[in-house]
Length: 380
Ligand SMILES: CC1=C(CCC(=O)O)c2cc3nc(cc4[nH]c(cc5[nH]c(cc1n2)c(C)c5CCC(=O)O)c(CCC(=O)O)c4C)C(CCC(=O)O)=C3C
Ligand SMILES: [Fe+2]
Image (cartoon, rainbow, N blue to C red; front, side):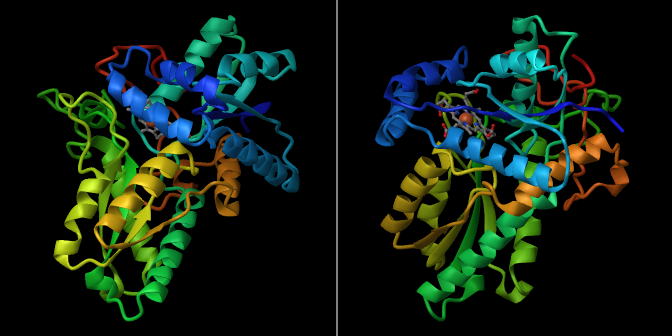
């Protein structure tokens, strides 16, 4: 048994009104070398929706769903919710938790894969929050493993792809699933240098100093997405003969053009589909846990528009959101830590998992920004 006294639900954060948009974007991009034009463009996405990102309400709903599931299971752990980039800030909610007597926190970050932005940055922000509040050494923050291949996270996508394909067949009677439909698994593009470091363990080096555990050029980040996509396709399609082609595509690139980020971009890929005889596209937001701005703008607005321009029927699959399988999976992830469940008894749908509870030395470091201390890892 490992004793925890609260669950820390750690979100990205988002603006909740027009006046929040610019300060929020400054918080997110401080020191990141994001071009001014890109910031203006992203500000416009938020302005289009009244300056309000849906992400905070989605995290409020997830917190409530977790509380209901915990109560149903008779688990006495309060859920506190804090954000990296907007109120309620992590430092403030951790201080409140401490004042209420909660000093051993198990964190769930709303992010499933390994990379600087999707794992280590959360861990660095936990360390910064403890340093800023003087609670370093008083409050302990552990974090559940990256859950990209946990059944609770994957199941909603399997259901979604099944339903998406059924919808395509209803819209275009007689369509050939194998030759006329393509499934695009979409995730956030990240700098190629971050991708290469994702999931890397600095201890596993060969005699030439090269990593032993290789995930390919785009690191564990891309490998994890591909492995999950394969599982989703196999589970969502009745037979190989009826399985559409699929590929992993990227969205929401934001760095300067001179800096390599993961490709191909979803819009570029969509534009190539008609010439291959594709008539319908199923878009799976595999990299995201809820329908936040990246999904509403980059997929539901831009990618859907690109599909229409190319004469394609397009369906966007739901994100896990508050799907009961996802909510219950997150509680399972907490309880495997509480109960010290051995690694070989933990659920994982790909060979890359179950991922580590404690991140490896050097894992997901950001070579551009340099070293910053992080919690929930083997080295600080
Ligand atoms: C991998 C990844 C995830 C998924 C994992 C996770 O969910 O954590 C994610 C999620 C999110 N990203 C979000 C928003 C933004 N991300 C930005 C910028 C960046 N994202 C990056 C990566 C990721 N981002 C990167 C490498 C940058 C470049 C700057 C840097 O090196 O850090 C910018 C700056 C403007 C721009 O350039 O787009 C914004 C506004 C929101 C909130 C949406 C809402 O408000 O509803 C969410 C959930
Ligand atoms: Fe982002």
